[in-house]
Length: 117
Image (cartoon, rainbow, N blue to C red; front, side, top):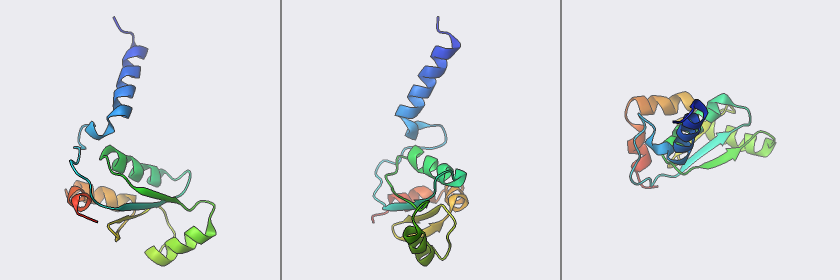
């Protein structure tokens, strides 16, 4: 018989090995989109957005602007804002974490991610 610790360890292991099968986040068969996300350390919204992308099995390029004024300036010029996260899918500016989750809720995120770059 398994104790609670063994059960939790097994659940955690399964969740970390196959995150794209978490309930509510179907695996995308073929992700062709180019995804870029500008982030900063200790940013809960960045973590939230990254977690959604990872659960969907999306490969993305992460640009950490925490300690780089040059990268922060590039972000401001590209997005018109310095707040993070800022997300682009196929060079289309999606916005931040809330915008990414709104696309997911509307059922539009999978379509964007499935498009060729």
